[in-house]
Image: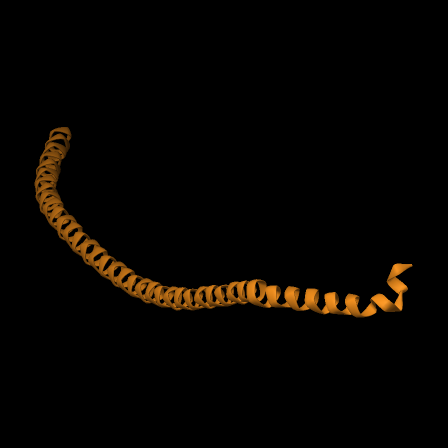
Length: 145
């Protein structure tokens, strides 16, 4: 076997050293810088993405705080509007009740006056009828005796 021949060891070691050095030089000059550059670019890209994510997260928190603030303001405004509407409705309701009470009182007064006149008229008619009946009875009783 020629690989185990001691006379060729020096030339094999020489070519091994030359091959290893040339491959090492080629890898360290070409591949390692490319890989290092790729890692550097990737690290920068990841850092930029983290920064953008942090900024987006801060903006989202600001927007959320603004939304919560606007929502609480809207709730306060809505409750104020509801209270005002309720107060106006109560005022309107009370006004209408007063108007109805006044109208009913006026109608009662008119009907009482009408009833009072009717009563007076009926009392007069009844008095006249009683008087006529009394006269009639007296005349019948006097004629029969």
